[in-house]
Length: 400
Image 1 (cartoon, rainbow, N blue to C red):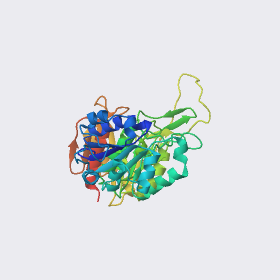
Image 2: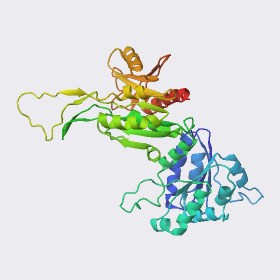
Image 3: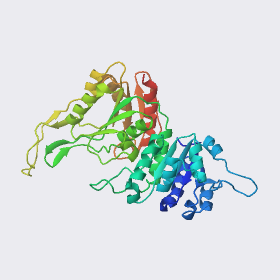
Image 4: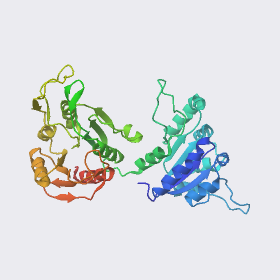
């Protein structure tokens, strides 16, 4: 969503200034036009010629570029930009911004800025913790600025990582998320993802190869487009991006019964549900309390059906709600998907097949068809992120 965006990129006098090259490179790669404004102290850490080579634009630092009356208009920059990003932003610059001390080109540009402003602080922990710095950041937030900080705090005190600048890829992701189209604003989407594990004994279970990647990609896309997302995730190692993890309500479950209980509780509050999880159809009718020892030549397990999550949600569904299912098939794909669509009272179903090698379980790619009562759309093989975007595009057109 950064393609064609005009970004004023401010750099201040911090050791983290070397990371600004990585941010610029990512912004330019995403299609943004970047104009660097650097403070005099910032030039002590990184040279304007390096920045100019990346942006293909002269770097602005002083009010006057020549002694012939030529000057840089901070007002024009404020009108030109779609966004202003200051990374790194020192405690000194934070203080000047919060109190309107316009003693350099960067601060005057900030005070003239009509577009949203994003700030990535960078300083040592003592400076970050100082009440003055905290007060300045709160004041800047109250002005409508966006403060981008690392989300991780690893120590019990929660202070490790505080003060350091967020990583370049996360800063760019934050901006990309901000500009993503918000066609799902105000909608609540529930998504199930990953496998379920049905216990045989304390150390063994019945499960499948689902990685949860498809469901997590769907959650990421919904969040970027403004939806409130509840993600019910089976036991997976997949993780949401730091930005999405702050916005998604993630509920971790293990068994089909756990997922059924969570889904049936949450679905009545939702506008739509996407059932992407690979739920076990059967579970052992009895779980052994202790590890089953190897005795004799055979072990017999008696299996009993699990509750049918899709069928129950289809029964509960109100007229204004949408219910989306997934069908992973090995044969007679279209016929089996059509049957499931009708039987479960789904609005549409996403079909994929194990016959498409390198897709489905554990893969980073997928190849799908979207089938509804009225039409079928077939898609080429794509990354699961792009597949998720196609699915949510289709969902967005059908939501009331």
